[in-house]
Image (cartoon, rainbow, N blue to C red; front, side):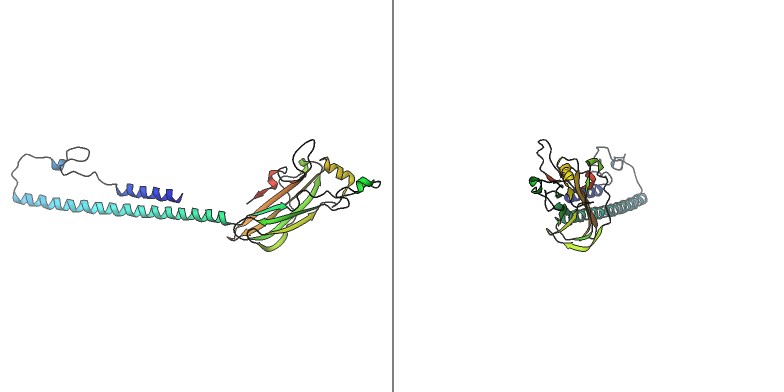
Length: 273
């Protein structure tokens, strides 16, 4: 883009400098082939010396005026070229600075620390031996995530909102998302490649009943985690990363792996600025 701008400006400069009157050839004809009236031969006439002197003086003044007009035109053209070139350079430099900031800025992503954690539940009152030995028995349901800087410059974490909830169907997941009051992260600094972990428990109860556990595995009860991180890059610009993950349990031969999956969430839950 920079080289293209320079080429266009150079071409414009040459075009402006070449603007002028049609030159007259020594033969007395213009480049178009027309006879120059000033060069047309006239019939021999007897001219008095005084008249010759006046005509010579007039021709000299006319030539000086023509040269002066040409210099003025060249000065005006060069001024325009310099102004256009300066503006073009400013635009090119601004575009390069903007592109550099976009490339070098911090980028924050949020990912689950455990993609498919066991679903915690409380055994039923008359639970048998098999039920009491299922994975997840008497365990809390926790969503743990890592906030990571994948950019090339440090990021200052400002605020975080995170929640882990259960609904009866995907259609009950609100879009756009509604976040609770965000927690202050006090400008926590994350350099390139650095990360920090956060977690939250399932609401309203961190442990499901056995009936709810069965509903999750039949996809009649949907668990999902979501949130948003606000941060600032080294250029002082504020950004926000939104994240959302649905705990998916495949049904009837579906080969999608069990666990947190953001592709199943509404698009508004996963975005970045």
